[in-house]
Length: 412
Image 1 (tube, rainbow, N blue to C red):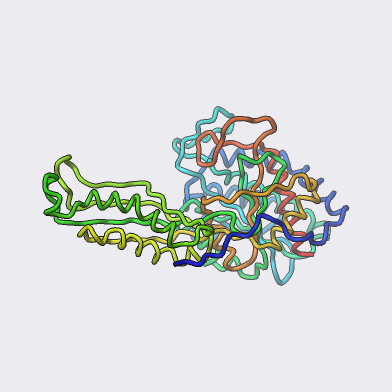
Image 2 (cartoon, one colour; image 1 turned 90 degrees about the vertical axis):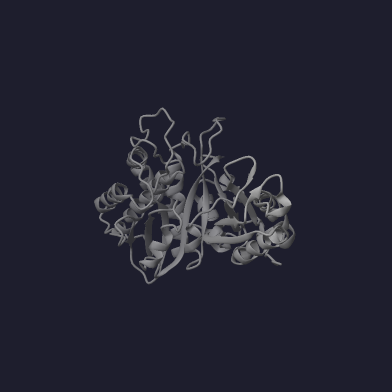
């Protein structure tokens, strides 16, 4: 049914113009000068996480740091999230961070452990924010020195973890107008600190929600042939719909349906009147994501046709896949090479985890980079969205130099 475009190969484009060595040294020196303050900022944010759309303290903290550097932050209309421009020019290069934490208890025994019960920064948004604040401080230093060749916009969005995410709030407020390219980083606990993972094409998947609700006359389990066996029909949805999709959609699209909840009945000998199953639909291919609602509903109805039940399919859009622009990946690769050497370039794995950075890429080309945060020799199994998640804080400086370098190369 779907002729999906296969994901791009994990390669980089040719090298763009390199950074002037004197500018590289200036960026390094400025980053080092702000290093202690940026670690302190990250720890401050980590100790005071706020959930989506409630990032008031976080927003004010970022505003204070930017104002202290002589910048003029502009808070989004809803009161959380902000943008700030540095330099002048018709078009801006944007650097994006996300502010919100997660509803997960912090399980680490560290001085900067979350002070809010049941809340923590388990996805690295505190690091992302410190990196983009740091990039702003370094770029402000360059602007004062008269060597910033254009305009850079810092974007601190709320509610990345919500659906729909805060990226749409930023876009709706007009804060992406005039942006010619956009970059972001995401912490990667599998990649060593100092390394940066890059990939051209799809790097994260889409994420939609699907709820299938079934109704029937109900009856006795002794006589399933005289009614509609609703629980059996639910089981067929769970097992057969993913199987049908695997033969109706190009497998290179990475379309995946995984069920997370199923509910029906209250007694062992009663066929219930109603039941439901819900889960997520993910894809790596933007074309297949566009087709997914119709394809999934058709598969559900086809599977259920023999069982005499009524069905309602409630399909909710989440976010599209993040598809990295080749030129933007090339700029990031050149930045990694300039500040760390080509040996710190890594190929990022594709993930079906979702990122609302994808919405920005429908307005401007750009790329998401995987920022290595695993300490040398650390064999602890850490993962995102876990209460034990932590980072090697030297990654903050790596991220700052990466984004500043990519912005300078874009402007040149």
